[in-house]
Image: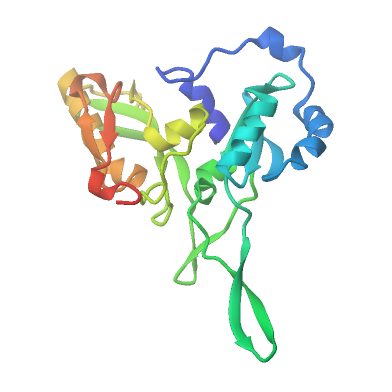
Length: 265
């Protein structure tokens, strides 16, 4: 699904950089690059894992680190690419990381116990990002029932103005991205930035029926705006449009989060 959307993103004005197929054809396979460099990278302080991620069309070398300092060191060592592949470095502590907690003194010795810290929200908790980073899928439960994770949805609708279609991010109710519990991570690549700051593609006009009566352009634009507005809470709770020209069907539209709902407020 992520691969399909990444390909679709090329059809719209978005920050995806032009590729150079000829140069990419000459580069070694991602697994070959990982085999050569993974050992040295994983020896660096703060490096948690080194894997291949992204999509089939745009493979990335993904380096997970435990601190901002470690991310800076990896960037100094690698720069922007490794073996012809873009490098995406992000901060996320190990799952189940423990910390020492001094216990009370009992007798002549002081006992120290280990406690598991409450997990800090991470964008790895978003199933869309997990799929992009090629992390193991997580089954979610609520009230004893399995619930669907965050998904990329290809929406198709027919209204009085005709048909329209677009992609959008439908986050689960407890996703830290949807619920504003995460600040935008530094050093984001194009796809992660799109998930955090936009979460939808401009609508395209489509005919889904053999005989379809199309309404006026104004009616079509209005139905697209109503649809995108109804879906905005799934993208980000509390988001409000600050730029939404009805005549552009989502092109150039922008939403923002009121300061009172920003992380840490």
